[in-house]
Amino acid sequence: MKDQRPQREPRHVLPLVAERLRVGRRRVTVGKVRVTKKTASREVVVDEPAIREEVSVRRVPVSRFVDGPVPDRYVNGRLIVSILEEVAVVVRRLRVVEELHIEKRRQMVRRSQRVVLRYQEPIIERAQPSRPALREQEPARTAD
Image (tube, rainbow, N blue to C red; front, side, top):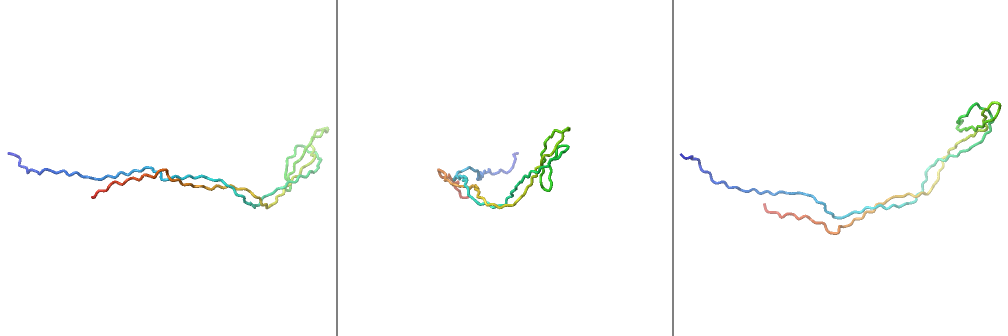
């Protein structure tokens, strides 16, 4: 006995078609830009407060003996610097010959002065490419 299976009809194979898109990038020169800097100067008047100090030195004779070096000191805003000399005595001693009394005075003065200031300005130049940029051709469309 033969197997009595129903015979199947032959199968038809239909190929499936699909479009694929490939996206990429490429560098295309469409122009060039050159940037340079130009340094220039201009004269301006500066009027700002400034501090001016004057120093006066007054020599004050003292002529007194001391036991050792005398450090510099401030008295009433004055710097006092002692000037020493050695004097031959039966015993050697230090004697202050004179003192320098140094005093500072500060004044606020306003002076106008011309100064030259430098500054930079950008210079931008655009240049067209030597040949026109190539365009990508679009693929031909097919009806769906």
